[in-house]
Length: 207
Image (cartoon, rainbow, N blue to C red; front, side, top):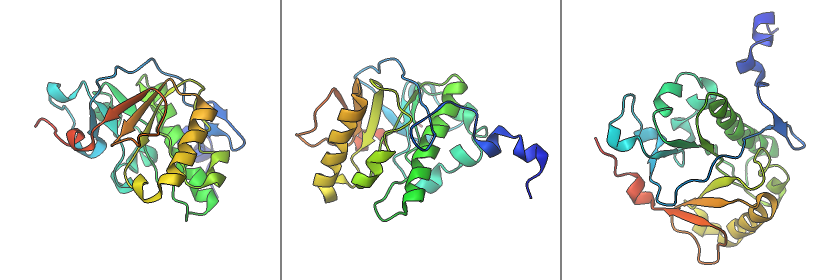
């Protein structure tokens, strides 16, 4: 049985932000436009008291989930480290077609909850958008304001180009993003105001 103190804890209830959509996904608010010549650093390459040369970069989470589970489980622990950088992409918790639907919804909710937590702490956050099959379109775009800047990752997408492009088209239709930060090489048919970030360049970290 849950104690009264736990029952009243925002980190237990996860109820400290606005929500949207059928499943009450936490809402990320629209941020100001991102400059076109951005650089990203992987969350696994960030450091406490990082060098000045790295602080103008944004932080991405296109890495294995275990490297950033703490952003959800213990969000305050890494707050000061991530706050050093120019902006953050919301964590890319995995969304696979062979996951049960409740797990996919949970991944989207965790993505948005962490982003909303950071925004509430005064950090600039760009929502990372991902999807699986057409069934995920019911919830995978929730928690993002229309016209926002968004980010998508291209890692592994070439194995299912058609499925990726269906989700990408649905994202454009649903969110009408002002900018799309594309991590990796975009497909030629991808439309929108795309800002391409080279994967290999993101690993060149000044130490």
